[in-house]
Image (cartoon, rainbow, N blue to C red; front, side, top):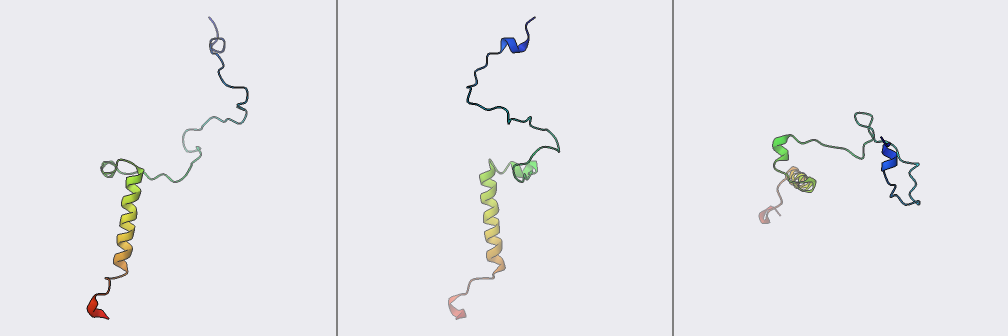
Length: 78
């Protein structure tokens, strides 16, 4: 029976430097590439992707800030 290495053909170009590659860890020791927020399933159903979540949250932030500032002055308030 042949070894797997004998059956595999190396198609990588010689200029690829693989010496810096590391095996990705699984579990709590794994590196993170930013904060991850997990949505509850019922909330996730309402949003097809991350952009729609961000758009909804930005809208909520804007509306909250506008409401905290108070109502805009009317013509008779001058």
